[in-house]
Image 1: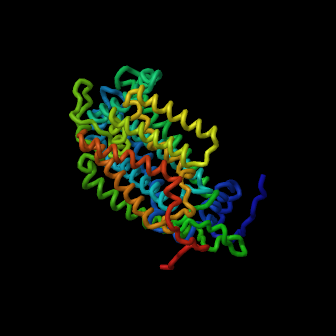
Image 2: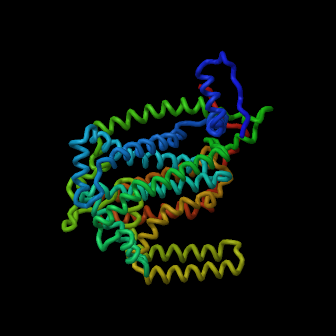
Image 3: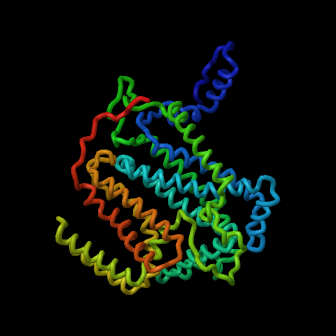
Length: 467
């Protein structure tokens, strides 16, 4: 038991209460000190560093609004759609809570995508922050699962058929596919059993995992320290007291900084809620205002906008596209054998692996490889710390053409997202295929292109202009 600290009888009431709490719950005060008042963050944070805090804010909004929605929602196939309409029409302020939750889902992905892009720009995944990045990617994967399962709950036409299409993709997996799809659905088609499963995962299981990953992400970040736009480790330069010369306490400096960002975000957030909650059918699809009908398929089935880049990659994998992928595998194997200093055993292994991969691509349906590509587009992000071989972290000190390459990557990702919400077309299919090849080429060729070009010298101290 820790020794109690005494305080003067003449101390203010607030000080007495603080001392009483500190004597009985010192861990909370230590956590505040370690993670807030004595956690030194780089003093040159810019606009890109607000999105982590905004993601936490949106997570809280989603949890709170979700609690109130669950009070009135009925996870039953015969009542789910009606219960959502009841929330919108009869529950006091129910329409506001529902729009906050639906808008919050899209806002969550907006800030998370921007947060991840900042990590890509400034090399926040590089040593010693590999675990921070891996936990972040796991959060993204968990968030996708949470959004997909929640998407079914309104039991509208698009959510029903969207779930039907996505779950059916698992049946393309050889040997275990049909049984796996049956296990996920709980029935031979999306039904009441599926709705109950998805509801339990969306409300209880996935949020618990998500919260655990968020805590792990923050703890890992505070153990190694935050990155900065220069990609310089501020712990390398300390004063006599052991404090980073280029660091400032997170509280009060960045808490006040983030409060301003929160206010600006909430202005935009509330504007969307009150004036464009459906966002032209992107946040809330018009087909979801029609009750689910298992006997009537919509003319065009597409997921919510934040899934569409990966959905485009799924649709891009056709029988013709398989030959292009085989050519890529053969080319990679030839390059690995002739242009690398790999041992002979390694080269033989590369050739054998390429032959097996080509044989599997020829013998297994393209639908399965579409699922593999869609999943691989997310999983490849986990390996980014080991794919990037650049001698510097930040985009500031890389060759100029690297910036243009990142710009093209963003454009390709946005184009894939746009094509994912459009009906299939021959031109869209070709563009999606090119975009898919570029997406994977961007990451898989990183060990080579990130080392090319003339790099700028990195300063020993962070660049900072007082304002």
